[in-house]
Length: 269
Image (cartoon, rainbow, N blue to C red):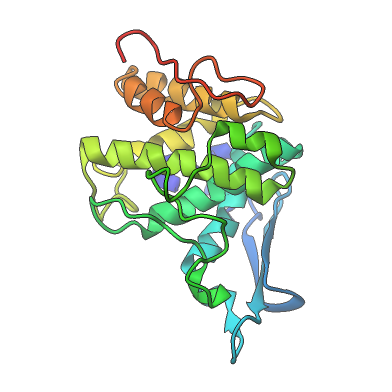
């Protein structure tokens, strides 16, 4: 993430900042096989203080399974550190409401998925299969562009009152964004450590660039708008129609409001 803009000056976790801005001595402290809970994992973010990640044992199988061995669980938790730091300028307090907290869960699932997609064919993605000992994984539906596989839409939020459930709606929208961008630009195995070019990289640039323009305790429409603005800032709006069509495919069109779906896109899209 450093190469994509999460640096010392943008409140990253780093023991020594080498004079590049921000505060030092805020490394991530990791507790593995933590005895404090089961079937869970968590990340505590404090402003310019060390982040704390606690990984627990999962007891859905015999023998039990260690969440530290499931990469998407680790990435999900670490991404909470990224999103809490980048949203709101390092305060770590901008995702406290129900809907903004749900966005946080969605970003974490979306980042976990990004690390697990391995080709230009964007497959449906299921989180946490191994630790749960369940082919259905943790979420209610696979993340998918197919509405018959994952029916979640913007209007689904009206019935949801839990952050992880809300997060699944947002993460699936981002799955659709990712699939559309990969269809346009292709995929690269080097995107995780090379932030140049376009293959698989545009998505993560927009993912990261959107946070600085987001408001405090935002809602889903504002998160969508931040992606549109991030594209305008970095790519002069070259991907605006791709983004709008992806969001609209899940009901988050220009006129979406009050959990009523909308299919409106800008003229020319």
